[in-house]
Image: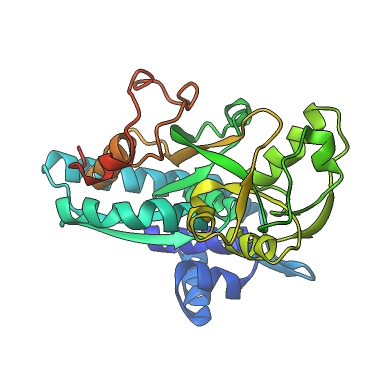
Length: 328
């Protein structure tokens, strides 16, 4: 069974739709159908049946699914082992990131990393947290850079490794002349907010701040999927916002937004990189993880305990570290 066929099979199994699977593996729909038919002919059994809700796995398909995932994992480890034994560090990596992290952290940092490692090709996919996790589990990205809840390790997927490499402060922002310093969270609860959608780390921190204080959460002016759109709505007077400082630093400097003191416990989102566990990591990925761990950090802040052992005593670097050589 060729790994290419197994990857296509898993894409169809997850999406239950040939068209969406074709988009996921970057093939024409006819090619996906041909590959599934070739795999079924090789195995001598039908892997899918059609239903009103889409494609369904047959008992044979259900039996193949976990084995296909394991075979693809072993295929990746075999390739990594050969590269490591040959002393090769070249390769192609795909990074996944939230919009805020991609624009404010990765965009200034990646050119320096690539200049020091010209044999490593880096691609980037920018999307939401849920999609990042799915892409990582499916093997479509090698590492994800995202914000995670501080209690996220409690229900962490054991198949994924994660390391907190910094913490990004969240700030309360308002349109100029529209906000006054709140005395407490009860004051804030009387105001309207523009927030991210449920499931986002910023929304979780917003909701829990009021819940932990025993205060009814404020009315929402709107829920928006983009931090940039939230900043523009707040600047236009739609309501207050609780957003990462890095996402609105330019708007604060221009005077489009003003920062108000947050009356509760200081809010900061752990900046975390997440990757799949393997017995042998591809050399190119090892280099990127090491460089990100040592040089890709926000301003010097306290991050709490490491989620992965091995570097809990490593001090964070300030932004001028981005100009230093990325270590391997």
